[in-house]
Image 1 (cartoon, helix red, strand yellow):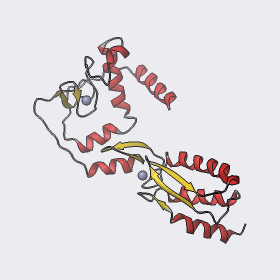
Image 2: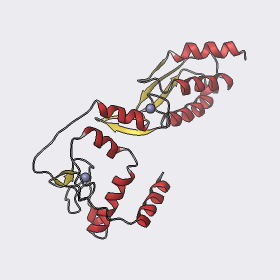
Image 3: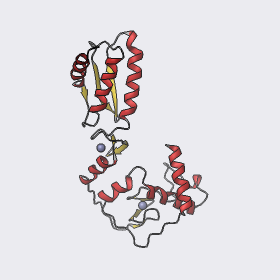
Length: 218
Ligand SMILES: [Zn+2]
Ligand SMILES: [Zn+2]
């Protein structure tokens, strides 16, 4: 196949993709090239859009092409799930104001600068998990953790942890590691102050075990 045929196919079809940012442009190009090089009928257009923060493709094709289409589509759907939709960097799935996004750390935190909530309330206590004065009723408005004795139907820490100390240590490590950048996001958006007497209860050994565990979870 001529290079300029492929080029034309890419240019004609890239217009069929509706995505929010420009971060996926490279992988969409790559995908279209892969279609062209794998015997795709270049008269069949390929369409795409973002849905649930990943790339979804569609096309009208004849039966012999269904398998090619499926393989390539699935490969790039997966790739879009780890590619920042704003800048193209390595990224992960995020939830933000009820929507799903695939964003790298920088682009995610960039959103924070536009979202300073400053929802301060009186009667806030120091949180045992993160050390911020943001705890009221049975949960922390800063780190999102719930009290060991919560009766919320969403979760029941008493079932999952031997005692309260083990639970606090676990939540503290979660905050410390900040796997999904939620704590960093909270720092930038929420105007809570941190206690100067906050104490970390977990040991270095426990932290290493925790890090190993979340690595294995993926
Ligand atoms: Zn990004
Ligand atoms: Zn907290």
